[in-house]
Amino acid sequence: MDFGEFKRRMLAHFRLDLHSYKETQLKRRIDSFLLRKKINGYADLFKLIAADRQAYEMFLDHLTINVSEFFRDPHRWQDLEKIILPGLLQGRGTLKIWSAACSIGAEPYSLGILLDELSPGRAHRIDATDIDKNILEKARAGRYNQDVVRNVSRERMARYFTVSDGSYLINENIKRKVSFSRHDLLTDDYPQGYDLIVCRNVTIYFTREAQDKINQSFSRSLQPGGLLFIGGSEMIFNHQELGLEKILPCFYRKK
Ligand SMILES: C[S@@+](CC[C@H](N)C(=O)[O-])C[C@H]1O[C@@H](n2cnc3c(N)ncnc32)[C@H](O)[C@@H]1O
Image 1: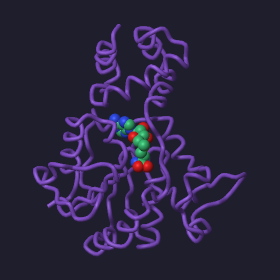
Image 2 (image 1 turned 120 degrees about the vertical axis):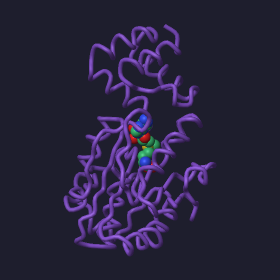
Image 3 (image 1 turned 30 degrees about the vertical axis):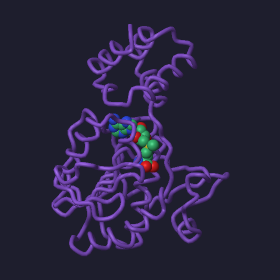
Image 4 (image 1 turned 45 degrees about the vertical axis):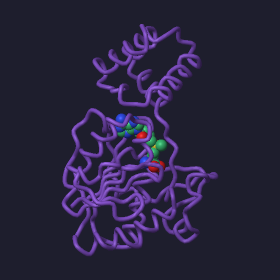
């Protein structure tokens, strides 16, 4: 089985759209999985993961890059804290927020911390999704090492974390604010009605066509005046076509 046929079989069997990932990097990761697990080619890999759900989840976990941290790109998060969220909170009672491709949960929990500080006691909704089930389990556990919390201030650390055995555990009052579920940005329907969508550091792995489709779907999922917060190395070239205006680096507003 060649790589093209493997991708076609994956789409038909799992609805996993590997065609939308940039090919060189994707192939490198899959080939390293074959080597590590001593699997003899794409046909054997497909047979294995089609027969064993756990093997499929392990494969998916290997495929995805899960690096994340609290308040990743601190300057952009300062803009979110000082400009974007106060603006949204002023116009709307409670906010509906989506952290898409949330990985280990550092991103939605960072949102939970900001909302707790800016509007304590208000019942906002934070949906957090990812394609990778294993990473969602880690996100729900909310236990982190020092690298992941390096941008958390001393005050926030004292208020929102418990330190135990060298790990940093996010407190229950923040955990409670976030609902985690599985969602594939390439093949699932998009939920609607968001005031803020945070989707950072994932579309860089996708082809230009897939990026366009995703950004179009995000635009539809936003309320008028809602905001899309993307990663520092990402760019939406055709934002005007999508009804989005760029208001700050990494921030687009739906007209
Ligand atoms: C590098 S992490 C980014 C985490 C976080 N947004 C941040 O910026 O720190 C990329 C995440 O995208 C997820 N991902 C990859 N393909 C996806 C897809 N098709 N749908 C949803 N999530 C996906 C991966 O599982 C991974 O957790």
